[in-house]
Length: 351
Image (cartoon, rainbow, N blue to C red; front, side):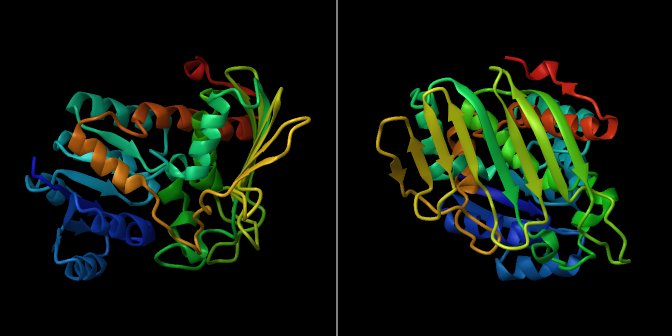
């Protein structure tokens, strides 16, 4: 492999242009080689901007022996096909969330990475914030004792202004391209974060998903969820809530609160102090570490640097397919629970 990791980017939409591409440019150990997008014009424009190649298909890109690894930044419905194709072509893969639109496809992506012996990483960027890392260390150290309950929320005004093609025609509202709405866009982040913070897994779900706010280009309610609320049971018996919403028409909420037998950890509830440790009979400990990244305030995610470093040093994936699969099981369980009105257990997540 080259001294620098040679990168291809598949999908040149907003997430690629705002996060993946500039973070590769800023990393001295990475070099952008080529791009593919379903809009040839967009791929040509981005390739010209970064002195790289534009490919006529994603298959052509992954077949190029000069490319070591790819970022896959396309619509959800194409994640599995392209990720499996890239892994089979011998490329390391950084895949945007959600991993795929069916559990079977998620499992197939993980199996393809194992068979190819290539690194698969999911873009679960919340694991990389300084506040979440600090909170995890506090939990691990026993600062709040045994976790009893929790609440975690990710809500903003919706993807209409985030998409590369903004407005009600955004692909986020198209069920053929997404299968899932806010639950897959935002809920998977918070589910994976719970796993990361607590070291536990979601093992049972009761959820409600709704489309009660967003309208498509024809003025009818969108066919994917714009709000999702789930009651999670973790593998240690703790119960709590996860909320994902495209209907927070104001400031974003990306907060998590963990309630233990010996205290509370608040994360991103205060703009000045991103982590608070609250324990009976003790002064509140407040930590100012790093503001949360929002759609309107983009900062370096840490995902790209972690991916490049992992590939070049040969260490295990910082967010492996196996880890992402555990979160996706919970997301699909939420969808099933909402559809059937039943509690859904996840036996494969029991640890």
